Length: 214
Ligand code: URA
Image (cartoon, rainbow, N blue to C red; front, side, top):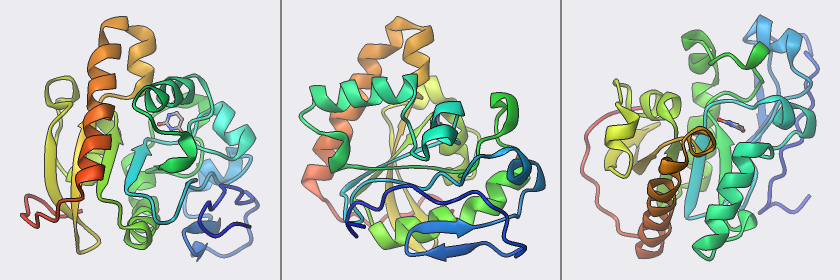
């Protein structure tokens, strides 16, 4: 495997260990969430360079992601790919991951306990990658990372300095790409947010102010 690309190919078998096991940025086994463990096809790990300046974090894998073992490969992923291309980035240039690595059944939102079970995996992945900018895609990841309620439509485009796993992290809040499929008027603000993310990552500014703790 190319170390810098870190493909999301964890296998979903429960291995009898209640503790999850990571290899690098990948979770290779985990059965912390019995319901997700029973219904998933596989663990869907983050993909993209392990030294990416820009990292996107979504909520949890959907059906397509569960089938292919890669985040954002369904319709939402198509929107993300299109907008990345419009700002001169390829999918392979950025890191893409999720708060929860196993597909919740029936496309329900991940529950609070599931988010907590996966928190240390995301923190470990982000510690390894240390992106300049973390873009939260949707309300669930924004609230999970910031630890507060987020009015995502109102706050999309905002930059927040927080700490994740003890490290300072610049976070840019975005609506979920799926929102642009249901409401075309969200497409332009979404594209502007991604353009801002690319610009911020390019600037690589090291402001260490703190507004929260992951
Ligand atoms: N939605 C998400 O939040 N994550 C994915 O990987 C796919 C769709």
